[in-house]
Structures are given as structure tokens and as C-alpha cells.
Length: 192
Image 1 (cartoon, rainbow, N blue to C red):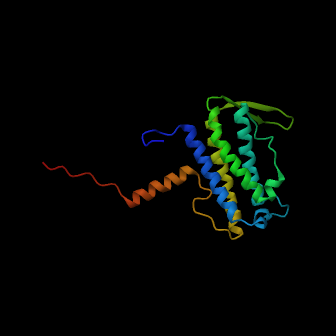
Image 2 (cartoon, one colour):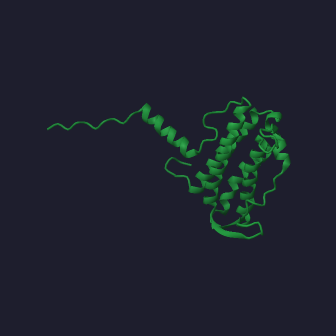
Image 3 (cartoon, rainbow, N blue to C red):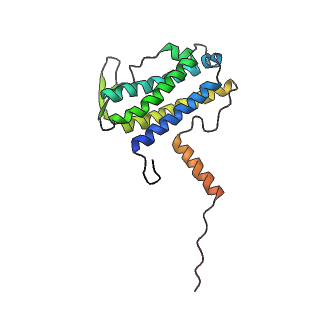
């Protein structure tokens, strides 16, 4: 891409998601399998692996739905191996990052999102777009990354400051830093 060529909306949203997934890959690289499976509650429902699997399930639903035109985040696979095996989660992260690049082939396709509203199987079919779902995925992923960061800190895992921070907040931080480093130059006084 040249300097004058602006990235498309979808390219930007895919890149934000890919950056979050790269952070998760780096996160997994510093965890031991025991840390990945460590239970933070008595029932074992709060583990780093479960949060990561939840993120991966949502991406898998997006990838499958992006091609078919119908996304259903509720009927996820919930693969227990992804919760227990950090190496398997790393493989899936890589597959998803690659799959995100191919999603833009379906950019003009109008999507339907299945959204259940009752236990009895009643669901809404909501019209959505790939751009909207990619924006959702960034926020959803970063939200769970923030939870992962809090849990990992309890295990003594050190993470970069940017881990679990939304891209819009990172941009805000950079602007603040730029303003401190190079404050605005006051306008020249006009002389008569």
C-alpha cells in the first residue's frame, strides 16, 4: 500500500483483530500449560484457557458465517482441547489470523446474525455486515484479554501495558504522548 492509498474499512478492522490475536499468541508463549489450565474458582470455570477458547469460538463462528452469510455466535463448538492445550490454542490462533485475511472476499455480502431471545428456541435474525461484526470482535476480544490480564497477574505473569487495551485507547495514548513530546507551537504574533 502506498502512502497516498488509504486502507479500506475492512482492511483496518481485520488488522485490528489480527493485532489482538498476535498479542494473544505472545501471551500464550509465556504461559506454562499449568498456568493455562489453572482454576481461579472452586468450580474450575475461570481459567485462562476457557477465556481464550471463548474468544477463539467467536472468531470461528465469524469465519464460518462470513462465507455462508449467516453468523451464529450461540452454537459454538466449545472444544475442550482449546481450554486445556495451549499448543492447540496457538494453532487455532494462527488459523484464525489467516482466515481473517480471506474474509474480505465476502465484504459486500449482507450477513444475518442469529440472536436467541428465549430458551424455547426463539431467535431473531438481525441484518449485519462484515465490518460491524469485525468491530464487535475487536471489542469482544479486548474485553476478554483484559480479563485474561487480570487473571494472569494473579499468577505473576507480566504483560505489556498494551495487553487488553482497545485500539482506540492505544491511539488516544499515542496522541497524548505526541502532544507531550511535541507540544503545539503557539501562533506567531502579528506585528503592525
